Amino acid sequence: MSDNNVVVEAWNTILFDKFVRFKHLLIAGLAGYSDALFARNLYPQGARVLDVGCGFGDSTLRIANTVGPSGQAVGVDCAKNFIHAAEQEAKAAGTTNATFFVADVQNEDLRGPYDHVFARFGTMFFMLPGAAMRNIRKALKPGGTFTQVVWRKREENPWLYEAEQRVKQIVPVVSHEDSNEVHCGPGPFSMAGPDMVSSMLKAAGFEGITFERFDTEICIGRNLEDAVEFAMALGPAGEIMRLAGDEGQRLKPQVVTALREVLSRYVREDGVWGPSSAWFVTARNPVRSN
Ligand SMILES: C[S@@+](CC[C@H](N)C(=O)[O-])C[C@H]1O[C@@H](n2cnc3c(N)ncnc32)[C@H](O)[C@@H]1O
Image (cartoon, rainbow, N blue to C red; front, top):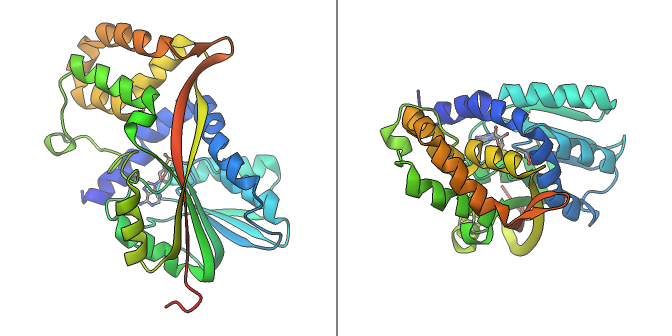
């Protein structure tokens, strides 16, 4: 399998299954970020907007409502299982101006032109991020905007980082290179550095690049057990557990104890809420673009 087939396979299988299992946390948690952006009226009635790495498509449906019947929201994802789930959600919601298609954003036709492109945590897993940024820009109309939400640095997302650090102390780390397992690609913090990301966007032909820090607390479990299961399944800690295979399973009791300790500090009456921090990155396709 080529590097990217490995990534697509991971999102279609193991990661899709985990996202379904923790959908109750993921959709509500990540919507905290997109809701803050959508409240700014980014997308006027009649606009055609692409949602990159749309997952279950909840953000695509929100955009469809915003742009109204004269507009269109289009969700793209490399994993056909996510696209199928998103189509089912749109049907159940009776949304007729949202469509979805399967494509690798790095190098496949994105069915432009779009007035705007949006991505909520959908751009951090590209093996070739520069190629993906260029492809996205080419799908935009001249003057069109690209708004992405990406995680800021690990240390500002302690519910992920502290869990990773503790699991690393217990479970031997197996790198993707030393494993035959499929994997998610570069990972959630690959777009955390503004210098690198702004250079990449500039090289892809974007202008007017800005970064806005946005912090919020997100629900990482209905209770402590839920939060521990979530940490062991997804994010960097979950990846260490998965790649460690049988050894990870053998060490699970110690991992559970450690994660309970780490995550207990975020327990509130209404669940477990971790501090989190992301960038809202915006960029514009120049009016005179090619
Ligand atoms: C962390 S999930 C975010 C999903 C959704 N935007 C959300 O906020 O719930 C990342 C998504 O990017 C998709 N993805 C990863 N690499 C991709 C690629 N090369 N082309 C298109 N989609 C990709 C994955 O399948 C997955 O649905």
